[in-house]
Length: 307
Image 1: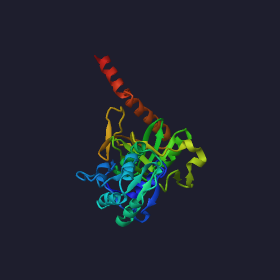
Image 2: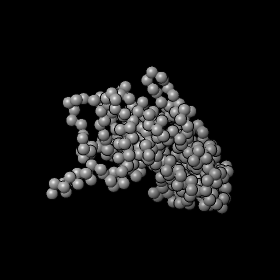
Image 3: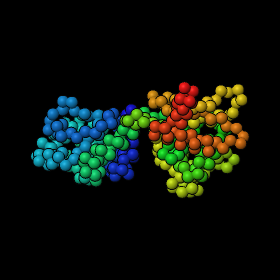
Image 4: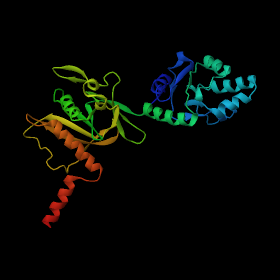
């Protein structure tokens, strides 16, 4: 998925301390490859296999090489680089750009950014940001909560009590990720990560009450910016004729961005402490991840007893 220079700049404002040197009017240019490139060979005149679709990073070596060239030669080398329609250039260590760089940026409509970070550290951090920006993502109807290190997504029909259940869990000391609408993405390791949208982050809607601001009521520890998705719990009205899972041996999964996520169907009925049930389900999932599956262990004991 293509990422614009503006999206990259906004995502890196804090972690990369990015600033704009030139080309602010051309921030809509697309970055079509998530890896970054140091164009040392291109500056030397070798353009075979040149990664022109990537962010071009000018570090200490590139700066020293350009400084060693005569002005007319430097302008020629830079012009050949910029005419390849690169998306943007980043100057590390907050170096001042050569006038020829600014001239080429204006002529070819290429944004020039800068960062105070050393080059290697910048590339590592920027690569993670690009991976997150270009990762496959979807918007999912549901409320996500973090319970003892387990990311749980509550889904179900409107009015079933997803937000109320999440609120009860927050009161028990757990943390809210998102309410009602969750943005899910698959990172480079194949893990599904959930977070709230920018507009609704830190807020929750409670029917009959309205919108509340979670950190103001419960403190900053009551919120998590993002969390790995480990378990989906579907809340649904209790039905007497429904064959609900009674053992836990029948493991079900749901496909999210081509990743199988465990899912549980929990019936909601008067008198059931759903928040407590969800909390125990999350802790039980954590035990499974640690290698202890209570249902399978009991099943094995019963078979041994029968033998």
